[in-house]
Each structure stands twice: as C-alpha cells, then as structure tokens.
Image (cartoon, rainbow, N blue to C red; front, side, top):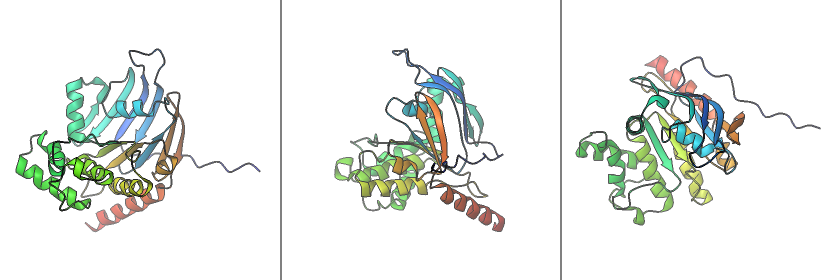
Length: 269
C-alpha cells in the first residue's frame, strides 16, 4: 500500500508577508554552477520556517540572500518593516548592513560572539551599534539575559559559559533590538541533544503572532537535522538550488494556537 502523501503547506494568508522572495538566483563569482535557481519563498508574520537540504543544496546561500548578507544575482526580496517595504536587492552593502542591524536578528552555529566581551556586553552592543546609550542598552541586555535563564552570568566571558549558555547569549542578542525576523543558521549543530532541544525551544518561543500590542516575530532556521526542522511550522527542502517541497511541520499546531491566543487577547484589549 502506498503511504499517504505528507500534507503540503497551507494556503498563505491574505495579509502582507513579512518577507517575500521571487525568482531568486545566485551564482558565485568563482563558480559556473548556480547556487540558487529561481527560488520563490514567502515568510509570514508569526511563523517558523525550517530550510533543509543536503550540503551544496543552496540552503545557506538562500539564508544569506534573504538576510541581505549577499546580493542575489537575480530576483527580488521585499522585507516589510514598520517604516514600510524595503526592496533588499536594490540596496548597496552599507544599506543592507543597516537593515540587518535594525530589522533582523541572527543566531549562528558558533554564535559569532565577541570573546573579549562579557555576555552582557555581547548583547548590549547590538543596541549600541544603532545609537542606544550604553546604560540603556545594558539594562535591556540584562533583562533579555534574565529572560533566557542567564541572570547572574552577565559578566562572564564566553570561555566561562557552556555551549548552550553561549547560544542563549546569541539568542538574546538577536532579539534585544526588537527584530521581527530571526535567522538561525545551524543553531544547534555544535550542541548535544539535550542542550539542542533547549536552544530550539527558546528559538521557537521567540516566535510571536501579530496582535494589538506586538508586530509579531518570525523565525527562519537552516538545518541539516530533520528532527529540528519538523518542529517548525513549515519545512522547506532545497535540492540543487531549487525548492522541491514545502511541507507542514509539527510546529504548525503551535503557531495556530499562538495566533488564536493573540486574536483573543486583541479582542479583549
């Protein structure tokens, strides 16, 4: 008997997407083989999306293009921000860096934190780069570290933290600016299974539906681990630079419950 087909991703909402990519293609200067081939992808407010694929499938290139780390060779990327829509492919490197600093958050496999700074300073610097005074930035950083279970560890440097604690610092740094879209590139790849589950829980907890009090927050995770990917609301698989499937993940129920809760809260407000 043939196994039932896995459900495909649900119909997209009619509200404007948080981020929309159309016809994304990219070829690196030192290669003749395209890393991306006409990718279309929509990320809505309040959803978690996992991007999977084998090595060389284009998943990291897609994340880098969506996040403005690289400019695609062709195609368009529109990021909807509180100040209005931004066409990322039309920006120069300095302008894209400004968008990344202001509107996006990042968590990487090794954290990419500054070893000479304390946990508090690593989080606060994300605000200070945007012009926030140091005392205000450090107060916000301390609040985020406490929220993520790191109260009392603010002055420790990375060498004094476990791998899981360091990733919590990275998650705090990604969220302290109020970014509505968090990109996580193999965030659990260097962690043991227990710590990996804890870090993934924190990332998924960061996803917020839009309501009367919040603009919402979305999460995009690049991973090679299907168990990690399936905990997201959507699982997008790439092969040879193309999306070959867009499936419902186990996190879809969690997203729907959160959206329903936000709607109820909004009605009571």
